Amino acid sequence: MSAAPVTAKSLDAISCHVCGLLVSNRYIREHSDECPRCAAALHSRKINSMTRTWALLIAAAVLYIPANVYPVLTLVSFGQSTTNTIMGGVIELVGSGQLVIAIIVFVASVFVPIFKIAALLFLVISVQFGMKARRRERALLYRFTEFIGRWSMIDIFMISILIALVKLQALATVTAGPGAIAFAAVVIITMFAAMTFDPRLIWDEEGENDDG
Image (cartoon, rainbow, N blue to C red; front, side, top):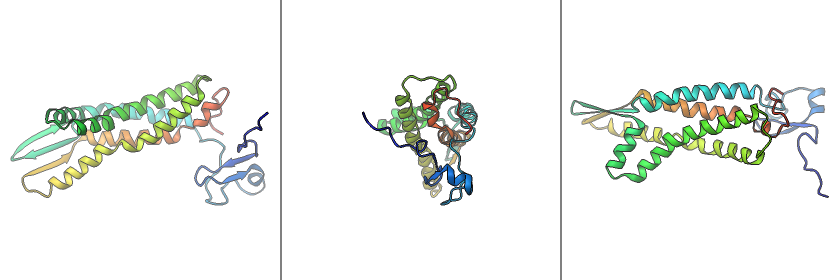
């Protein structure tokens, strides 16, 4: 018979969310509810995890629409102005034979944000309804979603570099459009949504220990 795994709960301790220090509940009762290493507030769970994640997901879903409808950049060359949305840019890249770059922009700008929103939405709904099946797979989905989020800003970086380079020339001017701002907001908000979601809720029996 294998021994039970050692966990923070089995040791009657709490792990600091900032520095990772394991602090016993006895220390908290006798001294302070602040981490002795970094002085961060100690709590067994992410506070208001579900409420905050829901709010951020709704905001990201709303902003995803203008991010894809409005132009991400405007190019002015010889008095002529050209605007491009994300998908418009992808289509132009395909038409010019830049298939690899088109795929990178599509994945980073279209697929990854909608995948993150859908994955996090599935996770919060599964916790909300106390889903018990496939807990390991859902935990892995959360880790994957959190990992790929950092690659969502690739095309924003590309736009920034393009603007910096073109503005050095006198022949053309490139400016970021409202779509770029909305898209950057979507990426940042989904990052925060992944951070506020507490994956430990997946392993709860009823999925209700939200505010500990």
